[in-house]
Length: 226
Image (cartoon, rainbow, N blue to C red):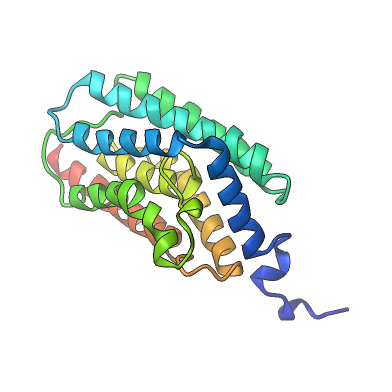
């Protein structure tokens, strides 16, 4: 029997990089033009965040985000990814629960995006949102893959999770429990990407680490205002 220390991450994957890329390509073709709608919604989200705070704005942002997580749980992870990856259904369950949590945030009186004062972490949060909405769709072409394999916010997990982390960093008061599923997915995605030898495998784990550090920093800053 082969010694356990000879195994690598790709030894535990049931699919190849080409299979996963083909899955994304077929999925994008089947849901088109959802990508364009999601991209416009993401840009609109960025513009809306520049408006003065209002409870209505906050509710709309988090309700739409909750629906994005539910769609990914069912439309991508369960229907598309699970047939080639048994763990995807467990991820789908977590995504569905995260959608419920985000909807609770949208309807609760507290936990919304309240910009009472600027925080040093706010530019980082906005940067994460820009990466998830604007930058991430271009990663496929940067790595030499076709546009048909682009990963778009609210259509694919990684950009949606990164955008969500950015929004959660803007939330006041910060709620660490809402970061659990996004951070777990970032670590999972990074491990899978490393096993598939994807050039951007480091991005999700790096974002998760940055978000965790910024959230802790933000909580300490908020404590000073009380």
